[in-house]
Every structure is written in structure tokens, then in C-alpha cells.
Length: 273
Image (cartoon, rainbow, N blue to C red):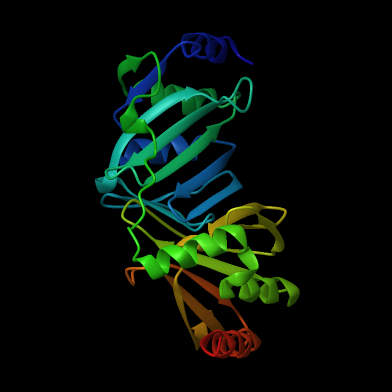
């Protein structure tokens, strides 16, 4: 670790730095990174992956990382903080939180990235002893009706009761890439990965590949619609997932027609229960 990095690490041992970031500055920061870990988190989805030598495209207030399938809309970024990474000795993390505090992006900055760290430190506006509330994610979910609340509780105790669980299981069984696509106020994300499936308590399903881990809270998905459409030149199944208020949360895409057939079978079975 360089002397510069040591100085920053020492300064951030007991502090959290609030930064004033714009797309151009953040673009310079990403371009100076040899690699970084990225974590996305909102009420229904979390995702973690690593990107090498990130490339940047800036369009007005939007910063795009095309190699990662990630877009950041800076008009909806409420706060930016730099702090030590509690999960990795020596590394730093840059934390971007949305205006409604319902979305958060964390970038793991390697200790060797002196130039990238220097770009951030020049945008310091104040220091804090701990991470302020404005930098903490605040998970808010729609208040469901009694019927939806019972359905959510059932998924929390028995994840296999949710049709999307079986659809994802089938998608993993096909041994073909699955695309996850969602669009929120601060972050939009579209990425393919080769999944394996691992279920967890309380309605969470995680799909992992060698490059990414994506987790979804199936207790927040109350409906889905599937159809065939062209995707990158291939007839593909697109499954759109919705919350209890009918707002689209995400899309699952697989480049085949078999997934639609399976979704139709699962949906018909659910209707007759």
C-alpha cells in the first residue's frame, strides 16, 4: 500500500467523508479503477459482482457502465459517502444512496487505486464520525391487503409455494443464461449470468455464478406476466414480475420458448388451487 493510501486509510479509520459528486467526476473515478466490486441493493433485489477496468459513458445526468449493464441517474442520488470497508481490511467503499433512500449502490475501492481515491478526496465537503442516516438505505414496502399479507407470510415460511421459485428453478435447470433487468429512479440494471440456485429462509432466493450473485425477495412478488419477444435477435421468454400494487419490479429473460411453456403450466396449476 502506498504512503498516500496509508494516509487516507488512517484518516478514515474514525471518520466517514461526505462527497459532492457529479457524473463527470464519478466517471473519472471509475475510469481510474483497475477493478472494483459493485453491490446494488433495494427493497426486492440485491446484486454483487466485480468489474474489470470499467468503461464509462455519460449522457447528461446519467452515468452508464456498459460492461456491467448498470446506469446511475445522478438527479436521483441524494448522498455520496466514502468510508472504510468493514468487510475488507484496507479497502474503501463509496456509497451512493437515492433520494428516497430505497436504493443504494456500494463500490468497493481497492487499496491500490491511488488515482481514483485522489479524485474522490478532492470532492470532500464534510466529515462525520459515523455514516449519517442520509447514507443508510431505508427499506420501504407497500402495505398489502390482508390476502396479500397472508400470501407474503406463506412465502416467508415456504419459498416453494411461490410460482417464481419454480420458474427460476426451471431456468437454472435449462443451463442457459438468465437476464435480470430492472429500472428504478436512481439505478437501472440489465445483466446476464449463468445461474445456480440456492434458497434461503424468509422467501429469499439467491442465484450465483462465477461473476455475480443476485438475490430476490419473492415475498414482494405478487404477480407475473410472461410472453415471447425478440431479445438480441433470438425469440425469448420474458417474465415480468410485479408487486402487490401492480408496479413492475423486474424482468427475467431467457433466450428460449420452453420457459414460457413452463410458466404457463405453473400459472394454470396456481389458478386451479
